[in-house]
Image 1 (cartoon, one colour):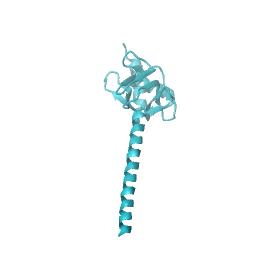
Image 2 (cartoon, rainbow, N blue to C red):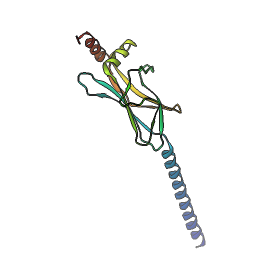
Image 3 (cartoon, rainbow, N blue to C red):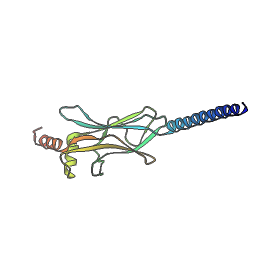
Image 4 (cartoon, rainbow, N blue to C red):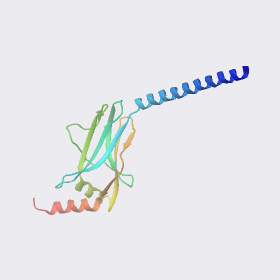
Length: 164
């Protein structure tokens, strides 16, 4: 009878210890997530029939402010397309501080981007990725966007030829 009582006390003690370990791990993990810099990066087309655009955006989904220092579009050959035609929608430029829930968006004409990429030797449909870098050097990437280099480069050529 004494042996079964010891087994029961050992079982309860072990259960409390496991519960404490789980609770401690959860607490440490939630603190780590809360302190982490979190950005959601996007790249998309803008619907402007006369002049289509490519937008890149960053949203701070974390609780800590993030200072964005650079932006570029990453090409499949790992080159940066960081030319000056990527413009900010408002009146602020990088570096830019995004607080919790803050966002920013930049754009470039799709035709100019297509012509730029064609001049770099790219053709066909290529995958573009938006990248933002913070002041600490961490890079945040978007999912890829399928971009038709030839289509927009040809449209840029036709737009140059049209009388103004």
